Image (tube, rainbow, N blue to C red):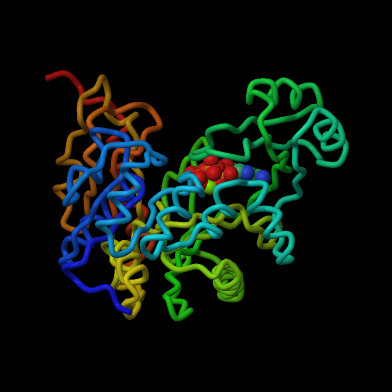
Length: 381
Ligand code: ATP
Ligand code: MG
C-alpha cells in the first residue's frame, strides 16, 4: 500500500541527514515526527513534531508507533530492539535485520564475507587471544576499528606493531573490534541506491571520494574510474541491497586498491557522498528516501551536470565566527546547504556546498579555490 502525502513519517535520529529528509518529506506534504535526544536537533527544528527522548524510551516509542504511518532512520546506531518494537505497530524501513548487520563492523564484514564480496583482510577481536593471533595474521600497517558506534574515523587507531595494537585496544576499553589491513588506495568511491517495497533498485551515479583525516572532504561526480569498474560497483551494491532485503536508501563505500574493488562499509541511510544529488540529479537522495519508504515509484536518478560536493567542518568557523558567506554565495553555480547546528566544533559537519559546472575540471577548480579561501581566517578590518 502506498503511503501518501498527509501521512506521517517517523524519523529515528535528528542530525543533518534527518533534516534534509524532513525538508524533502514536508515539501511533498508529509508530516514528520523526529525522535532525537538532542533539544537542538537539526531535524527536530523543521519537523512537525520533535520527540526529545532516548531511542529506547518506552513512552516515546509508544507515541511513534501510534502516530506514524511508517518509520525510517537516519543513522545506524539505533538499538535493534527499538526497530523491532516499532515494527509491531507500523512498517519500519529499512528493517531491523539490515540495520543490525550494518551497525556493527563485525556483523557487516562477516556478512560480506558470506556473500563472497571482497573486503580488506580483517580479523575479529573479542579477546586478548584474538588480538595476538590477529597481530600475526594481519599485515601492518593496519587499523584497529571499534565494532560499534564508529563514524567519521572515530574509534580508530593506526597500528604498526603488536604492542601498539595492545595499547590501542586498551584505549578502546577492550571493546569488540576489527583489526583491518591498511590498503594502498588508488581511489575511494561510493554509490547510493534505493530499493523499493517491490524490490526494484535504482542507483545513483558513482561518486569519487577524497577523505581528510578519516572524514569525507569532497565528492566528485561522475567518478573518474572506468565504466567496467563502475558497473562492478553498481552490481555489488545491488547484490548487497537484495541480500539484505533492503527497503529505503542505502550507500556502499568502496576502496579501489591495486585496481581491485573492495567494500569498505555499508550505510543503511542516505550518505554524505550522495549530497551532490541535491543540486545535480532529477531526484535527490532524500526525496528518494521518502519515495522508497512510502512505497511510491522510485524517482529518476539521472545526473543533470558534473558536480563537486565539499563538506564544511566546524574548523572553518575561525574563533567561533561563521565563514564569509560571500565566498560561496557570490557564485551562481555554488549551492550552500547548512545544517542548523548552533555550535561549530573542529571535525563537526556544519554544512556542505555543491559546485555544478560544465566539466568536472571546472567544478574542481572553483571548489578548491573557495575551499582555500574559506580555510584562511578573515583578516582584521
Ligand atoms: P564514516 O562512517 O564517516 O564513513 P568511519 O568511521 O566508519 O567513517 P571508515 O569508513 O572505516 O570510517 O574509514 C574512514 C576512512 O579512513 C576511509 O574512507 C579511508 O579513507 C580510511 N580507511 C579506513 N580503513 C582503511 C583501510 N583498511 N585501508 C586504507 N584506508 C582506510
Ligand atoms: Mg566510512
